[in-house]
Length: 188
Ligand SMILES: Cc1cc2nc3c(=O)[nH]c(=O)nc-3n(C[C@H](O)[C@H](O)[C@H](O)COP(=O)(O)O)c2cc1C
Image 1: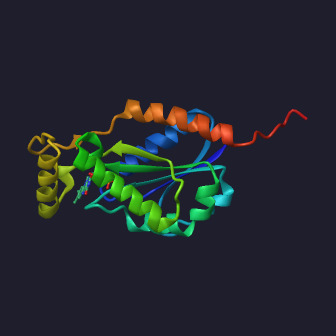
Image 2: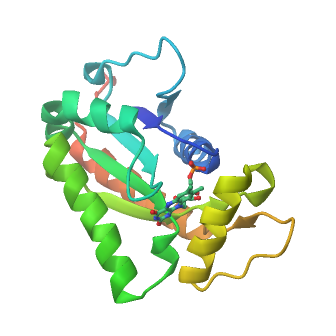
Image 3: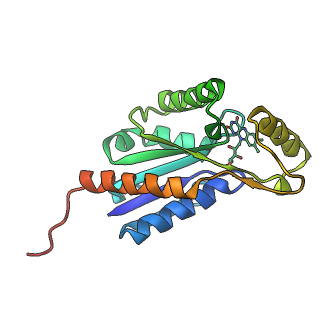
């Protein structure tokens, strides 16, 4: 099965998550193309794939613009093929109803704007990479961490991605993709 894993990332955690997704799916036998939408010259034709995973992270309530534009331009095919949207954020670590609502709003806005209305959404916790941030981002994320009850240690990054849970999600996702993809019988 040929699977596209296409992502947008601002600080690198979604890239790391998608590298893990690609590696896990390859280990299951899939032929995976891993593409960073921000790489100049990136151009994909979804007709070349049997399934697609699109990923983006939330920054101040918004997903990366290039991913949103890609989903909008390709919504008809995405609605039609086995596909999934991976939403990376910090809100997902918090079960607080306000945080849940803010996540739901991001996803609903994404679906409504792009037209990828049947997107199956998987929420994955991201990271706070304070060591790589500028002054403004350090303060923004300190505030975010405080709002979300996350404990930051000075000078240390905080990775909240649950790799085991992600692997379990991928097991289910791959099974769903395989079920929806007609097998090519080469036995003659
Ligand atoms: C400036 C900034 C704003 C953010 N805003 C949000 C937000 O509104 N909601 C949220 O859940 N997470 C927010 N986050 C957390 C990111 O989604 C998280 O750090 C994620 O891992 C970023 O993925 P990336 O490294 O692929 O860009 C924000 C992070 C930064 C640095």
